Image (cartoon, rainbow, N blue to C red; front, top):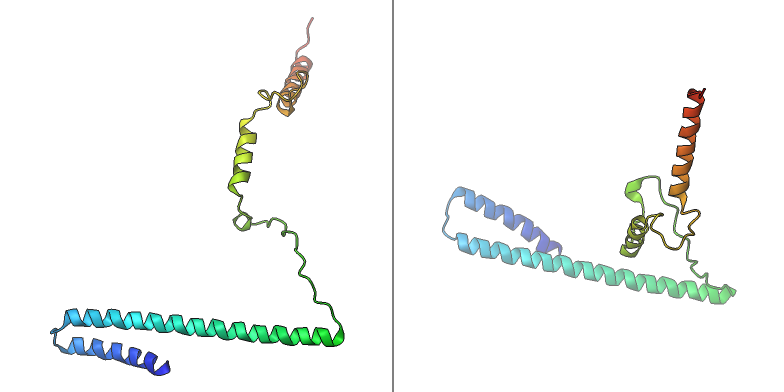
Length: 151
């Protein structure tokens, strides 16, 4: 593997020097050779990654086997992983949890459904919006009455 990588590194530099010195006799062949070398390099990287993953998987299996032997020897029960509640929403809005399409649809529906058009509420008090408007009107009325005196 190391020899292959070294050959690729040195070979590419020698090809660059050859091209600078002269001889544009095989540009098509050079391109094909470079593409083939790149494919070989990518294949070597992929194989090395697969070997590394397999090695780590085997090591973890051995470790778990040793852990289980220790648990058996000392009669220790294996700790079950407890599902933790999701962490509270961070202060940074960029780090918050993304909403699912269902949540977005529910929010849009709730916004569309106005308190005045809601059929489920009784006729006497149709919601927060009406109450807030009535309180504002009453406040304005009292302000006007305090400023104006009828004679």
